[in-house]
Image (cartoon, rainbow, N blue to C red; front, side):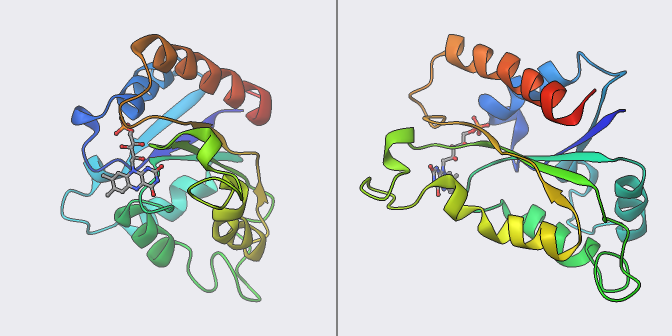
Length: 178
Ligand SMILES: Cc1cc2nc3c(=O)[nH]c(=O)nc-3n(C[C@H](O)[C@H](O)[C@H](O)COP(=O)(O)O)c2cc1C
């Protein structure tokens, strides 16, 4: 079963981690379909029926993005607001995401040991992504364990990023059963 990866990076060409991850994803065209939100909608005018049909076609969907202000980049937040509509994603008739396995893949600028209660961030990533988990549950979808690379801002070496790209593919194969 093919997995859909929706990438939301405002400047993928200037990115290190997400660009490398995207290159790696594109090596598996039989197993992974890639959809770049900022490329598809440079004017931020999201084609809602197109996005809904795309989601309906996949049982496994990964949302890939750089962690911005402990959350999504803005076009991905807009995508949730506009695509996950009443009567489609939720409400008495809204069952189109029911049973869909949904995961997050995030590049996170700061170090892993800051993402603990006693660290400078004060919260774990699991705590910070509770709005996503709650949204998935609200739509009857199943939230998968997240995948992340930390220290993505400047600390990670090229080798670490290469390794994270391989680990990311392994994560998709393990959790999405491709
Ligand atoms: C607007 C903005 C907000 C950011 N917010 C966070 C943040 O809340 N936590 C964090 O650890 N890193 C944060 N960062 C760092 C990014 O997560 C990091 O630059 C990105 O993951 C690197 O991935 P890339 O090489 O694919 O661009 C932020 C960066 C930008 C530009």
